[in-house]
Length: 302
Image (cartoon, rainbow, N blue to C red; front, top):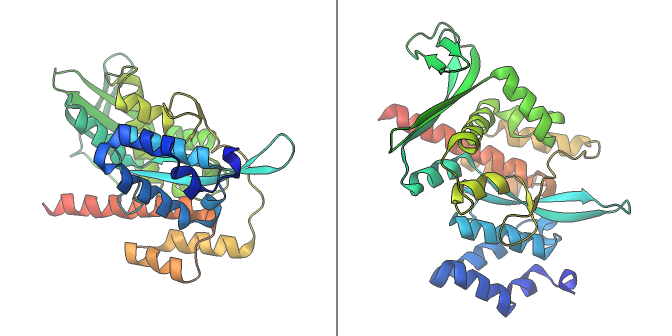
């Protein structure tokens, strides 16, 4: 019965509105409006199973992260998923931006500092499987990136570093990302950003003080997944499924997204030539890259 409802009708149900009111209080109506606006702006997402959109939105609400593409914290992205009968079904996938993990770490009150950085040739000083890695970031010899490191220090003094070589990051992308396998998406357009997000996420998942109730653990579990319930505990990862051969026009628009250097450039693509529904996720990823680059430049200018 729920499948026959439009997304707007589904979100107007009293039980749905009550659930968001329970999670967000007075902010619930504004949050629901933002979800409906996101769905309305994407033809493919409008066709998505309303329950999958609801569950993704519920996890974002639980994590208290805004669903606003321009902010780069969390996204709802549509995917065509093959069904056992040979047909397809559009499901909404929940995705986190790199800034979400930083935000949740800061919000927890347990982190004194957290960061991630590319490692250039000459900066890796010592590699010890027991005591960890040592770096000297003043010893950069060339502009060749050999790997990526993430680091955090807790208020209680515990600290940990995770380092992955560039090849290890590539292997991770090939294993878990559909867009990497098809030589497109954020892994292709800005490998460094995805590698930094990967090493930061893995560091947190392995060594951060996680518990069943923690927001950080929920973020790690639900990132890049279809959410099957409002708790975010039952998830399905679909990003590594194959997709059909790309037609020339689709490829052209994808490459135009990758060539965008500013947020204004991205916005212009909506007017001409327009963004195909299944490239909305790529558009979001490119926006995240640009926001990341802006923040890096602002940090350098301080």
